[in-house]
Amino acid sequence: MAHAGESDPPLRFPIYEYLYLINVHSQRLVDLLDEASNRFGVGHETVAYYQSLIQCVRAGASQDIVSFMNSVELTEEWLFERSRVNEERKLLDPEDVYLEVRRLEAERAEKGLPPRIEFIEDVKTDDAP
Image 1: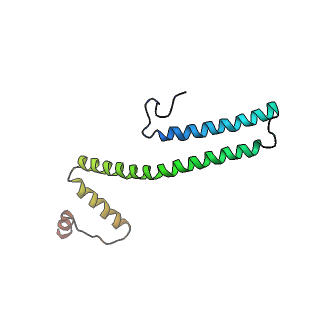
Image 2 (image 1 turned 30 degrees about the vertical axis):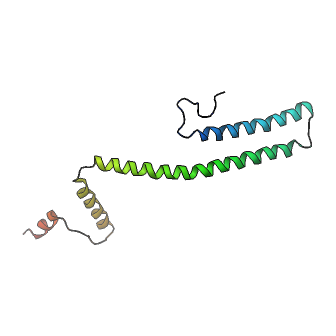
Image 3 (image 1 turned 120 degrees about the vertical axis):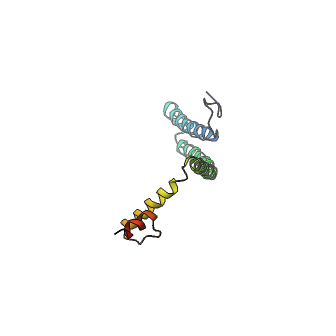
């Protein structure tokens, strides 16, 4: 069996491999207790108790890992969003801002809102005889 952090390609955060393994092995332990109880009559009275202890530990460990990683993932999301926006800005044509303003003004007009700006071409055509 491969160990956490040894996948191909390695995960960005190997902690997720550990989380997976905690859950897999916890379930395997629950299943083994059930199998031992059914096949050999061992501990019928206490198997459910032991299984609930295992599941409680599994759930607690999983919750702690997921909670910890939530803040890491939120930070990563913010950082990569900033990176994406910066890269998109590099790709934009400086003239695109005018097209975006025209699109936003058209949306305002569709909603029945007054324009915030007037375009020079629009003023010229309105003044034409």
